[in-house]
Length: 85
Image (cartoon, rainbow, N blue to C red; front, side):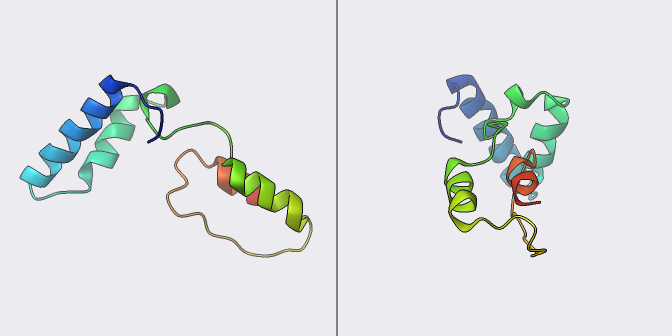
């Protein structure tokens, strides 16, 4: 959640606090995505590009066409996963 706006930070903190208080500590993520209504600008970690380190690694490894499997944990808007495909 680097470089996010103070308003976004406050929203995430509020949703997380509400989740903990209602004994559903992870529900805030679903709520955040639902309230964003598809707008990436409302999701603090949505950068809309693959992670620069992943891009660098892929260039170094030249993995295209090798039919390998990969799993991206918490890929959010899928840009890392698309780069791996």
